[in-house]
Length: 443
Image (cartoon, rainbow, N blue to C red; front, side, top):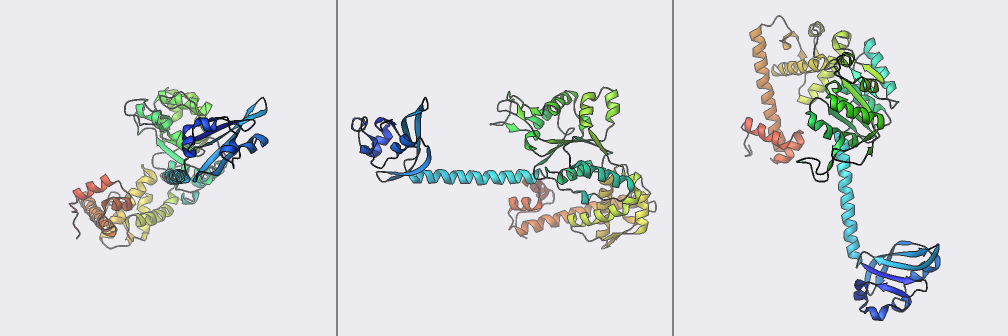
């Protein structure tokens, strides 16, 4: 860094050795002299006269192009001197720094984009299929709630599509350009749930990452956080969550600095929270804080008239996912499906349909019939149902092998790229290669 200070008359009172080296002069030759005697084109006298600040200016010193900053020294409202300084000995240093900054900004934008892609809503209200009066009413209510910022509690049996509704609400809200962050309150042990929700500081515990880590509430900044299976959250965490919802402030584990949060909270559960409150298994004050407005999704057995629409929509989605061409479901098969109670709701329907589509595809059939649902069809014996299941498993494995081989061929057997194209972790691909004995040689 080059550095020079002048008084109100423009006389040099201080100059650092780096600047002296550039000038090829000694301190005795410079200090006490007017700045224009040393650098005739200096603008420091202009700074003294105007009191302006030159934050960034290009300047040449003995053939060295540099970037310089000039600031006045002010005391009691009066300019009593000026300072000229530069961080760079030459423009090449500045260009290197600018290049690094641009590269860092580019990488940061890339990571921001990746985070957004990971934490974004994929489902919209148009994707929620059903024409039954109860379903239409619930869907309409959810659409209206999208325009507010109120906390929402979504209830319903497992497999009814609670997260799909949460995503659709976020997608239709003014926060749809910001993240949709999901956390399952039952999938993490209690000692990890707090750090996942609120993040942690460096050194907060053994194994904590250097620099700390933001929690889900921070990642959901200005967006929506979806607390799935809220009924299974431990009581100790319920207390901390209540405080966050009331104060809209979090503290990272091991931290002391409060962090303000701006997120919309949508919670979901398949449990009876009112009964849990009576049993003292769920905090009453948290229940009222979450239950500002409620969206109760009907079970599939309560809307059997929606089943044909759901079947047709799911057939299209499953065909696209597993690359099959089963186009329809027979009326008898639909009636069979409508006669079932569906304890697993739409999720169970999707699983059974994927199984049926694989069975039909094995026989080169494009229409689903009763026999493609062996677990439901009484005309199929238990042995035949088991045989169908075994045949299906073999068919799925065969299709998986072909998909993996095709992915490897398409990227010239680059396993890292193949895993990326398949949408799986590289370790998952390696396990599949080992399982199916797919060698690395090109065949």
